[in-house]
Length: 239
Image (cartoon, rainbow, N blue to C red):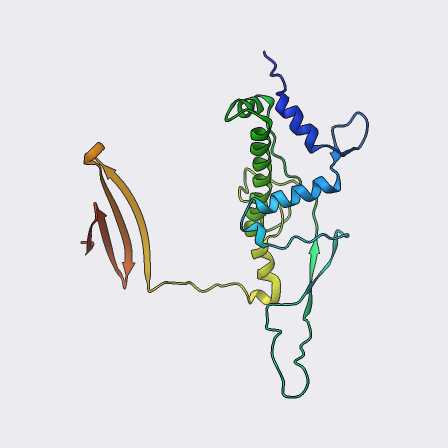
């Protein structure tokens, strides 16, 4: 049995992260971070994903209620013959219900030591790696549950529902219920009746390296394949 010492950079990271935090009790490891740190954490989570950065994250004061959406994407610019152009701002509401949810990305001191000893090994390198890890973990789960969430279960089963289907209701589940699912596409979509599959392989080594790319696709009921190797392309139907 051996004990891994806490890396100094980990102590510094924890001290900076919990600066201004309020502990629930003197002998507790549970704490709430300060409002400035919370804002920085929200920004880091949002900026860690280009997709999440396009979404609106709204603060609410109640666990259940209705959100107020002011305005829409219709045009608000124009002119009239008499007077000034006028258009009222659209206001809509959507019901919401919050569920208590935990996100945990645990890391051991041994793993921290490996991170601290990789790269430059200074505080800045360690802080960047840890911040990126936690921000991406949270943001990717938000997106994963948003697309795949179907229901809210107690407890959740991450080994069974690997895409977070049981964590909460996602965007698709909500869209299916809104306005009788009018925004959900149910018809099959085909692009010129073509379905394509790509595969690439290399043969030989060194200067004799040969790369071949195969394209398989269906078109009008027939299976075709196209191959490209060293700049040459071949196209023919399968036998």
